Length: 110
Image 1 (spheres, rainbow, N blue to C red):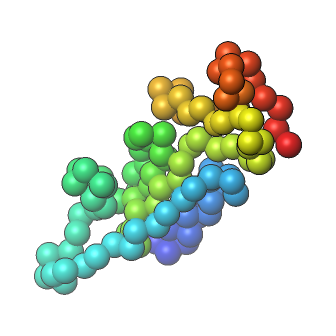
Image 2 (image 1 turned 180 degrees about the horizontal axis):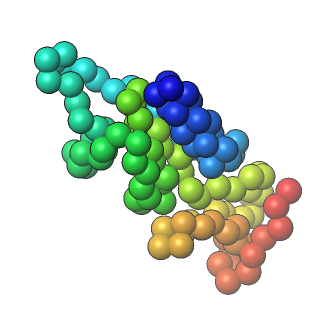
């Protein structure tokens, strides 16, 4: 039953993480079998309990008994033309394409 719950949670993460988003998985390390980990450690060393989810730095993360999964919430599908650039707003976790010559004007994707 526990493995089914983990599978469903991981499947949910896959759905949340769009195909154009960047995702990673860090397998749980068990260094001492007599004292197994109580959760997942994030990149800042903070411990998150198993079966918990959180958002940080525009990433959606989930801790399971198999490891830590995170997906970038900022997604952009399409090519960026040479005369344009992608501007990322980390406060709203969004991105938009603007003209390099005039950043107040948006570009149309290819």
